Image (cartoon, rainbow, N blue to C red; front, side):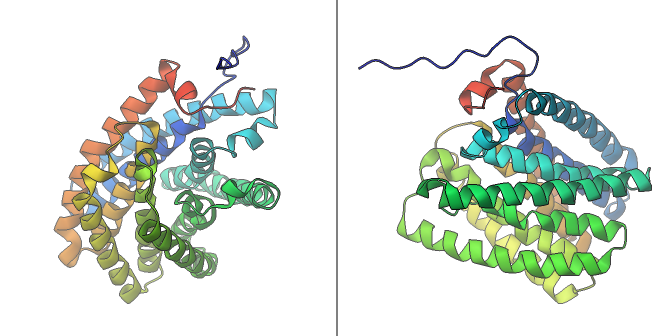
Length: 321
């Protein structure tokens, strides 16, 4: 049997930018925003958070520029990216990072931050339409529910959180209700899959994504003064963290890969939730912030190094423009 060698990348700048770089960048954004909350709770220098967010914003803008060049060369490349799991999660997190960039810039340039938020909603809506089209017309295996569905369809909750920064509370409430219902449906289907089927070792890190909607729903609930809901989300997040820590060796059995980026944002978002609520959650939030500070940059550094070395595109089967 002979194997067809991979197609060579044509000459030209940024023809095979791997979208798998974006989950880790999203995690770094989450870490910076968690440090903003941590600085308020523990009376720490605000410069730590702003330095992190400034560096991440620059990295994101560079990565976004590189991927935009790839799209301009051949716009239909986006369809190919969405057919595979690393590409799909990468493209979606790239769009979700616009919401986080909006929150990052809000204290400094309100109008620009609002414009980025609107761009985030518009781009995310267009992406969902494309995903739904692929769901209807694509092969059956692409219709399987995965944790990445949270990013695609529940990810609007990050926009809801950003909207609270600009006091768009009605919009936030509508998105909160809608995304909570969608998240509940995805959780129920995913739980059934985990019980009945064996999750392949390379895909197990993606299970950590299930933690993100809990933390984000709690953050939005806290911003909307739905305190009981926020406290409930904090408790559920704690149970999920304990479960993930107990199964850490099982989750990481396949060794490091770009999919480890799925660990980054849930850690940071959970830290933000606990720090926001304070009280009994103050110290758990601090411990989680320390853990995220140690883990998130380490994973992001490895992923960025793979990108810089040209290995990330090959390992994640990124499309070529």
